Length: 616
Image (cartoon, rainbow, N blue to C red; front, side):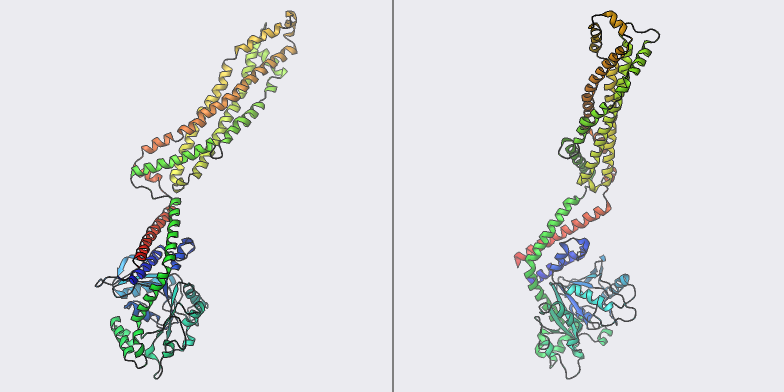
């Protein structure tokens, strides 16, 4: 294969990549990929209706494969990629929308183009900008990408919208205005070139004529005594690129099914024997046009290789970053799946611990519970009401029963203290619940912040449910422990406190006075004061011990064994059940598959560019 064939074949293959992936500048394709498509040179075939566009394309391909008829025949863009194969290989065609079907009968290719057009537009004269992609593999073609566009028209006919003229022009313009688009402007020789729709549009988008190739068709149909030498030799309409004359098959030849090989031979004979064009015969005809376009494409591609390489590298970098964000494909074996699940759990667990230990916000809220909420709750307990003079008298009297106490009202003290200690149960349980709610919120945040988990909504939900279940167990254990701390204070009062009471009674020095005072309001006030002091001492102890129990039973366990039961359950699952946990969002899976396919194909394109660059 020559260097030219390698270069043009390279661009064909890269364009094929873009074709397969659908990267034509759609909004969903990303910012760089459409730029790569636009950076690759292609040839857009432009002409008015019945200008001979189809015949030119068929002459270049060497096959009858395009629909024919009157009016608008081409109603959708046809992206035609020609791939040169080895000699003696069978010719065949493939459509992008039928990727696994090879067409060796080109009459069926024509029918499929017509049918696919009708599928999009209906059997009407409407047009559609959605292209049909056709690849032809043949030893008789040059590597080339041609885009056949609907013929330009001046008026709408019956069955077409009033905007058809503008619609077609806008569609054609969207292709030919790209700076890397080579314009193949088809004009019939038997009409005034000044009225050519193709040349008018080409002049607007390429005023210098640098990327426009003028093609004159139907030279054999000109009036006798006239010729198109002024145009072909560039005197009446100058372009930077040469003009090429074409002699199409006549309608009679088409009706007789004259093949393209015979038609090419007849075309060569026409120019060789024409008194007007014999001196230009070597630069006329469809075969020369194909070679001319190939040579031009080679020079354009050589100039574009550095920018194409840069764009491919940039695209690969974007795709690799996207793959990292989306995550790599999941293993299909159970061992690999289990490894993936455990890795995701560890990632979640790491983030959860960072929240608790201070690497991320949230853990400080637990300290706020201990330092603010619990002390505030303890201060609000209704001890003033419980130790009011009236209630102290009532409790002490009820504790004495029918026989009043003789020295110190021990049972009254016990009942007052036990009743006061019961109030501590509420703050103890509230502290446990508050810590539980913070931990639960941190689990929710950690699940959201574990990017790797976003791919697997089922695993995300199962992991969160397992974590919540574990937190409930920790809460119940912490609640029992906190209440046990309160109950312990009620079950055994500090003896030293009672031992001080008689000493305080005897400090007055007058035992008779103490006896008389034993039933006065002052006596009951002292009892209330003594109980209040004892409760204050217990409150200080619980203010320190309740947080310790909560941290030990909830925070510490959450850090140590939040997912232990989940690990046990996962370890018992079979491959199918593991696969369900790694059942991704279908949209995400589709996105990753597309991304992986793009990455693979663009990496292959880069290798080909590098190989051509070194051999060029």
